[in-house]
Every structure is written in C-alpha cells, then in structure tokens.
Image (cartoon, rainbow, N blue to C red; front, side, top):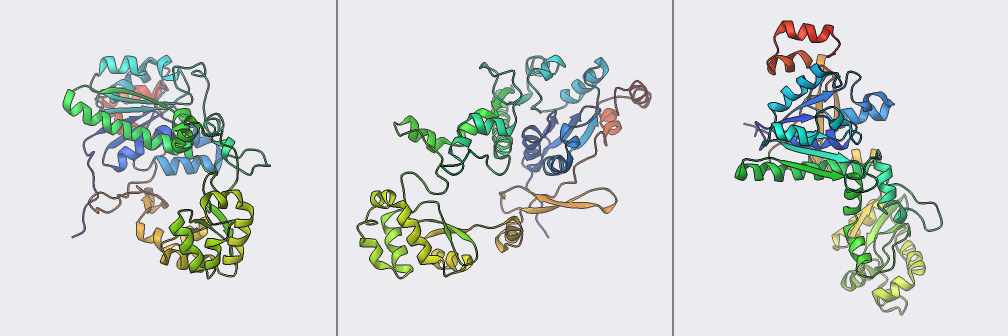
Length: 396
C-alpha cells in the first residue's frame, strides 16, 4: 500500500489575502504541509491574473490546491464576509500594498484583537518602521536596495538582477517558517502572534556571509562575475568542449587533487598557484590554465571525472537540460496539478520529504471566485443571503 503524503498541518486553516508571489507562496507552503487555504481575492482577482503569461505562471505556481472567494472588500458586507472566514482560521497571510489591509479594516491590530489565537503574517516591500514603509516594493526593488545587484554581474558592466524572483520566493518560505514557529508557540501559550517581514530584509539576509565579511572589516564587495574574492579556484566558470562547468577546489588538498586528476601535478607547486593567496593574485592566469585542462572534455565528462575524485563541480545546464536530468526525475519535485474536466499542468512541489512520504499533489490553482458560494455557506450564510450578496455586487 502506498504511503500517504505527510500532512503535519492537517486541520490548520489559512486565509490568504496576498497577491503575486510572496504572500500566496507562504500560504501554499503551509498548504503543502497539510493546511487548508482560502484565497480571498478582489472582484477583479489577484493582480497576477492580469499581467500576461508570467502572471499566469505565478498563479499556477503559488496557488495550487487553494479555494478562491471573490469579495468586494471595500464594502461593509464584503469586509464582514472576510472576517467570518478569518474567524474560522488559524493563520492570515497578506502582502498587499502598504496600508491597504488597515484601510479595509483587516489589518493585524484589528484582526488579532478580535481573534487573539490567530497568527497574522504581513510581508511588505520595505518594512513598517523606516522611512520607506509606505513605498510599494517588488522583488527587483529589494534586489537593488539590498546590495544584491551591486555584487551581481561583470565588473565592467552595469549591475544585474538575479535571473529569477529569488527574493519573493525566499520571503514566501521564510514567512511560512515564521508562521510554523508561531503555531508551535501557540500550542504552549494559547495565544497567536503578529509576524512581519519585508522583501528588503529577506534580500539582505540572503547575503549573510558576504555581509558578515563586510561588517567584519573587509572591503566593500563589488561585482566580479564568477569566482569568489578571497578564494581560488572558487565558483569559477570554466569552458568545456560543449558548454561550461562551475568548479571549486580552493582548499589545498582539493587543489592538489585537482592537479593530479587532470594530469597536471606540477601546477600544485607552481609558484603562481602554490597557495590560495597566490592563486587569488593570479586568478586570470589560473582561469586560462583551468580552461586548458578541461576544454577538451564535455561538461558531463568533467563533472563525472571531478565528482569521482570528490572535487566540487557542476555542469551549467539550461532549463531543458535540467528537465531531462535523472536527478530531477528521481527527486519527485515535479508534480501534476489536476484541474477541472481532466485538465492538468506540471509544477514544482515541496523540495523536501518528511518520513519519505510521497510529494503531495494538490489540485490546480482555482479560478477567481471559483468557490465563493461554498465558502460563504461554510461561513454560515444562507442561500438567500448569498443570492443577495451576489445581486448587490459584493461577491463574484
């Protein structure tokens, strides 16, 4: 008999007031651990539904398995309906524009006063304490203002963003982590918590090692493309016969082993490369030598050779190559999200397993307001009341 997916949060109810990635992503992380999630949308829906193909991908990626209700939250009746849903919940997650939930009467101060056991997570762009608290914040702004873009790219080129919305995704996971801690604390105290984080704080926190180096007196970090400022070869991009690999072998034992493995044992005692400090000082020459050593091999041959000798290396793969990777296939990370009328799409599931349980495969993301009537009924509204809400334009 097949094992059931792990669901440690079974019975936990979440109300998701979020849009785009960070808020919905935090809620869906909880869902994948067994919680049930209600996505409360405006009558027009999550703004991600209106920004083209990539927005549709956000909805598919971060809203699987949720139920959606569409409400006019600016109306008294819409607000009351949201509060009824929240009254039955354990967690509220929101990442709306600064001040919006408070204007709607759904901010943490009001809601937690009504429901003290509730755990309320807010994710903003720049936090609520500093002078930028009222600014809207997207992933790219946090990348820029956290220093991340200043160290990303080539030294003689403009700063670059990371190729994916990494800060949004990290904020989702860190927000969910904080919620889990608060739920655990509630088991002891009986009282929930108000949690706040921001994209800016998450973006800075992702750079903890580099910040620790700088705060400890190192020079301000700058863009250097591949490689690391204090070690070599470290995170070097090396051309191969058919592409590129990344290589790190800066520990003396690893460097000496690399030289032997590629048949260039004399490099280990070469005055230019005999110590890490000398390799850093002669990084340009070192990179040329690495290319000489490996450019005759394919990327797969390089990785196989180096990995067999316990040297860190990885092939630089395209998305198509990653999709064909046997490691990805073995991980079970790709799941099939099933929708209505037999429709389905592939997406990414949880990147870890609990007790080796199979990866859960929730339903596809809902259409905006797909579950409105059912959720209102569960919240105690009668059929006539639901009809009246619909006629008055409070629900869609």
